[in-house]
Amino acid sequence: MRVVSGIQPTGKPHLGNYLGAIRNYVKLQDEAHDAGGDCLIFLADLHAISMPHQPAELHASTLEMVATLVACGLDPARSVLFNQAQVAAHAELQWLLMGTARMGWLNRMTQWKDKAGKNREGQSVALFGYPVLQAADVLLYQATHVPVGEDQKQHLELARDIAQKFNSDFAAEDAPVFTLPDPFIPEDAARIMSLRDGSKKMSKSDASDMSRINLTDDADTMAQKVKKAKTDPEPLPSEPAGLAGRPEALNLVSIYAALDETTPEAVLAEHGGQGFGQFKPVLAERLVSVLEPIRDRFVELRDDREALDAILARGAARAREMGRPTLDSAYRALGLVRG
Image (cartoon, rainbow, N blue to C red; front, side, top):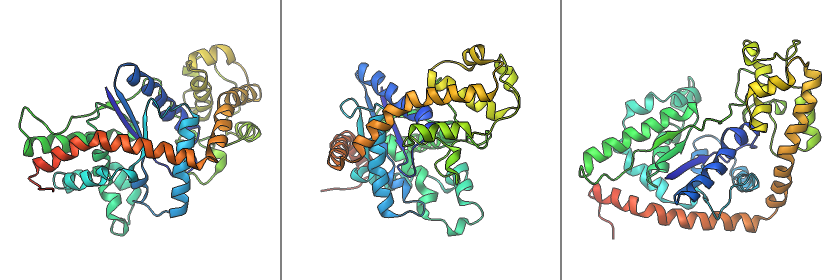
């Protein structure tokens, strides 16, 4: 079992990142370690430059994301935690795979269409080609399992297509260069929505800070955001079917269930019939009890830049060693000569 996943270092990490991805990284880290496998988690800083960015902000947010991941329970002794920019093999393998990837495949990528909008001619080549870098990210380490959300499944399918075509074109049938990675969607992966609009995912890029619970928020800020979260006038139902057509109510119940590692059914069995004036303070209290220790640990780590740099350096050294055999095999398969 070899788990590989990346997370964008830009923007403030929020509750949706924690419940939807980071908490599952910690579980996967432990499962892989206990099974004698590996878990590689990288900060996708090379992906970040596909869009306009401020270099100083990218550098600072990369270090802050390391602090966040460790504060949430990712253990650099049990996982390989690093940033792409320190492992040149990611960019090298992307270029080697560019000869195999097809324009038509990339043109069909939904996220390319969404991010480029109507101004495709004005977008960077990196934005168009970043799914190939995503393929390189996982193929480099012979990943067997890649945690993905629904919005990233298409990119993993592309990675499999690229790997399959490369193996078919350049490798012996009994000695493929790349492992075809399988998507891994944890059953308990929570889909957390905006506190201002229950039909949209909680997002770092939302203009309103009130739409999300940041992992850096203090207890009072968390409580205020929950108090002002959009709801409807009806009380909570006694069963999930009663949440149909009530996206904001469903979101708050889902958040409580995810924090408590239980089900919406269990939450409604306990709180059904309550108005939001009763439910919101209980939710805020649960939120603070889970996130405040993470925030305190984050604040402690954030100011220790030497320790954060050391974590990334150690992780990058391990990642370079783990990825070298695959990169060498890809060069040989393509007939490229290196001294």
